[in-house]
Length: 301
Image 1 (cartoon, helix red, strand yellow):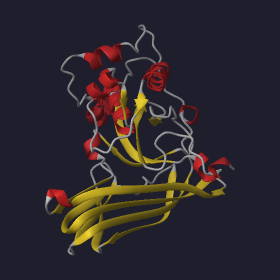
Image 2 (image 1 turned 120 degrees about the horizontal axis):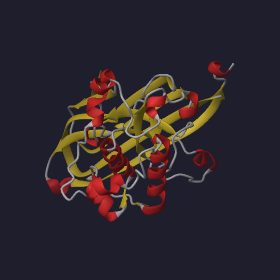
Image 3 (image 1 turned 45 degrees about the vertical axis):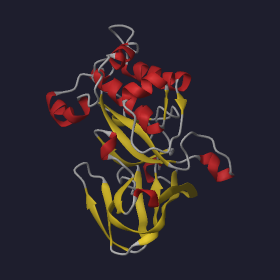
């Protein structure tokens, strides 16, 4: 069974007086492929803008918006409707034998293709990240799935989710030191730890479908906003999703929009405005991801 879903993502910036705007870029279109088929989508802005679409080097769809008019409020609304088949996890594509033990035995071609996702990106000046990483490897015969499971469990047991208004992503060292952060911080820490163990890992930005919201409740951390997690490449299964914030890696919950080597390459919305610093009054974001129906999955027939 596939889910027919609808996503609405609205961001509003407010200013004390009219300001002008530079080019804005947005990542909101879910990645198309085996797990998703997009039916229709739209991007609108107030004040109006000239909108065009580009594809970056990682095959992410980028919405580019150029503004002419000044305004004291900027609203950007993105809507998309699509069919989501869900991620079935490792059981759908069994691991090859060389993927069972740590470190994963990638082929020479895979090393070439995955090199950007294998090299650590963040600094570790006090070696605290390296020490924490080693704690997940108990012996010479560790199974990859056991290491991944231990790491997810550690985030649930030892880290506190903490939303914040400041933009950007904490360094892995800061997240480790404070044992707290956002979904982006948790994903980035887990990526850098896994890279140090020889796993090809990449950052993912997207949306979180929370079935509880359909009934008026909130069941998962990070729903009602953009979400972030990571993907790990395991030979045989390919790129697998792992969400350290909610300990999920299958189903309809994770809807990927952008993949990247590091978080700065997957900022959901970026752009510039021109005026006095004190003119900025704040911003609000509203994201809804809802199921509007179900469709029979032809692959299950």
